[in-house]
Image (cartoon, rainbow, N blue to C red; front, side, top):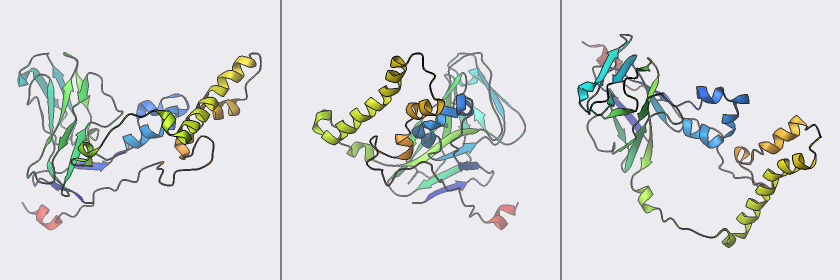
Amino acid sequence: MKLECYVLSAGDIDIRPASNRREWMDATPDRYAYRCLPLSIANAHGWVICCGGGFRVEWNGGSDPRDVQVSLAGDGEVKVEGHFGSGIVTISIPAMFRTEADYNLWVSGPPNSFKDGIHPLSAVVETDWMPYSFTMNWKITRPNHPIGFEKGEPFCFLFPVKRGLVEQVEPALRDLDEDAESKRQFKYAGRLRKFLSDVKQIKKDATPDPKAERALRFQRWYMQGTLPDGTGAFEGHQKSLEIKPFTDLRNRETRAQP
């Protein structure tokens, strides 16, 4: 499917495939956070828009839009304001997006990424018809606390979602006993996960083999897309995403005209 980004004539936009990397994940012992494949996939599940320039914001706790103070770093172009009041910071996006028919854009902050004192607001936007841009909004959660965004820092994360799909879902509760094979795999996985603690309890004085202990602690079933008993693998399993960058199809001669 197509996802088109129409850049406004007065500016440019820094938009790129999202990275699965996070500084806090890099800082975990042995970078163990990356062993959670669903976490890494979510990190990279779309595109990020990055700040065209650095800025600082601070909120005094009031409800008026002027209660959010904004100072620009002067190292690029970015439009930031306390447009809605109540500590909400609004960052303009210098572009209009167009999705194919019946597709929205999920718009939020970079997933599994944190900033002290401020939190991104999420939105679902009908970009298959709207002829104007949208903004990215963050809610300051700590008054009188300066918060900085650097030039090139991702502030917006987006990906397409099928409109109406969630409403077509027919959720149901069932007993695990109804699915004998899934129950067998579930119990098999539970026994393997409990095996390491049982061995340690039995052999309290034994020196554990680090490699064996690591293998038991991180079975990697989901990472490899395999069933716990090793009888099969899921053919469509994804270990990573290859998100395409935006191809620049703009008329450079037109852009160069004053």
